[in-house]
Amino acid sequence: MAAEERKIKILLVEDNHMNKVLVKEILTLHGYEITEAASGTEALKSLMEERPDLILMDLHLPGMDGITATRIIKSDSRNSSIPVLALTASAMRGEEGELLTKGFDGYVAKPIERKKLLEAITSSMPDRPGEKS
Image (cartoon, rainbow, N blue to C red; front, side, top):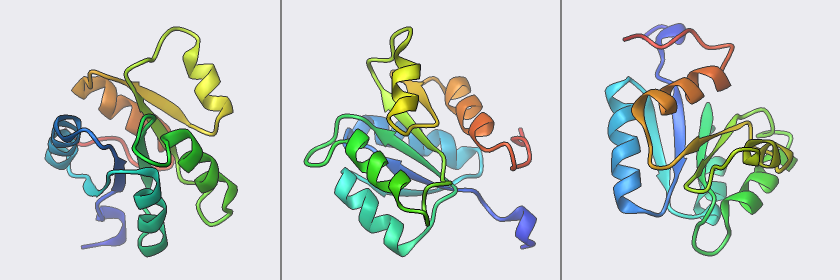
């Protein structure tokens, strides 16, 4: 497989089983490679082992929440360029700006909609070729 054909790796940080299954199914069907973590702490451990191209981060996680984990990720120069999208059930008008000040590069509202999830990923990775349908 040529370098330009390699799968885009996404770290999915989500503790809700049904959300995890749904997001993983959508992304796998669209050719993404998924690594999972169920907490902010697990996400940080995963980053030590493998560098994803993008992170989908739930805000409300057991132990270390998604906001804290994102701050830590973005404060590390090795990981600061990785786009981090918040997964949130509380995405109200105006909240996106607040999330951006906390280090997120965008957000995907829950319940997850396939089209919006894929658009958010594509727009967060401008250096990547567009999605193949």
